[in-house]
Image (tube, rainbow, N blue to C red):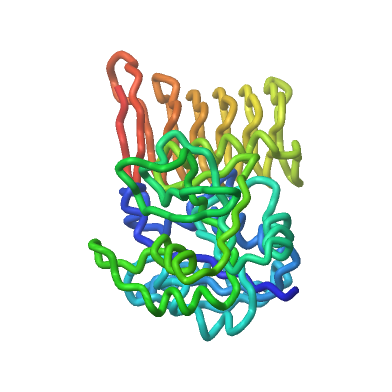
Length: 358
């Protein structure tokens, strides 16, 4: 059966400000690779050849960063969305691209381990018009929540005060063309958006079969800083150690565990404990880089300690007097030592920031 993929990359990323003031949240790197690449790779590994990416109409940031798809061997079509009007609106404006094909709809800021091929196979076996992936979560009231009876979904409620199950509808959906009937008939919700949960409810109410599969591995909606750090941890846990060309690790350094050293990086008199990734041309000197840390390209870390953090490109961490942990640093951030005793602080720092720590 022929499938297309539709990936949402609009949205404003308000919960990730200030980083998203200057960068689309779908391009924030996890393990030094933009989040959106993981969605594209999931589609490619499932054998999909045509991908539509819905973007903010006023920005060409995503098309410029991603390109035409040739590097993945696929054809990418960009579908501009004038305003963030809900996920059902994302589907609605993609009807011309999808046509009558079945398709997987993937939220570009979601990450799932193990690929999506199995869900496409289950969709085909189920005979459903709509197939949802579900994940057990601690806080289902933040998500669309399904009501399940006899192995079928009989209702879906968006951000309910009293959830009817402990499942969230994850950001991976599979549809046949009947979804367009739904998104064209539903009305905007109280917040003025066309809700995908309402489209699913429309299908249920009109007798269409809505199937589901539970994601048994891990799934992350990277909407908040802590989610990004957790996704970074999960990706790094599964990386294969690799030392690329022109890497320089001096004899006084100790690199252990699952570590990726990208080309041209230098490790001088330092300890790197995996899982971790040190970006292209980065320098780590007289420092400690602990587990679950991504250091971006061209970043310099001197006389400092960093652990369980995401540091984007071109940063300078110089003589930081305390360990930086659980932190998210945007591009070109500087953390330099100020006079005074070291005190523990935590950062979420946007692009072009400079912080003095004491």
